[in-house]
Image 1: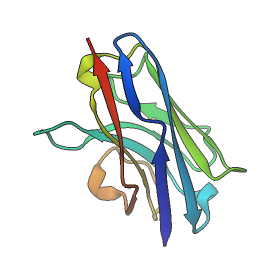
Image 2 (image 1 turned 180 degrees about the vertical axis):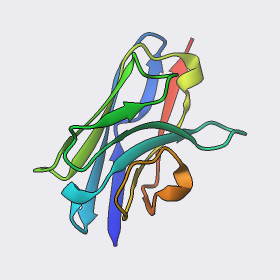
Image 3 (image 1 turned 90 degrees about the horizontal axis):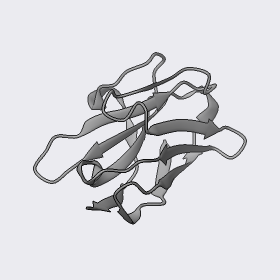
Image 4 (image 1 turned 30 degrees about the vertical axis):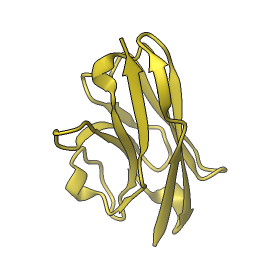
Length: 124
């Protein structure tokens, strides 16, 4: 089992920044691909970014590519999402997730463990 706890969400003005953290416990964290997803009211959960176990390979959705950065610190069992240049359309509940199998994926249904989510609200 893997337990994931997100933190760092909040209310920020457009153009501002936030850094989300996801603390993991349980199985070997450093071997798991970790992802960030978000879900706005009335919309499906969408991919934001993922990082491989080592953190050397990352990938972000086109909508956030130049503004958000995923990183991880395996010594702290924590994955981060640095969000800069926030826009009102970034408003959503942000979730971190872990895959139990090898490989990379942007599909929510390929992740096995999820945190409870943290709310990010961007005002215009």
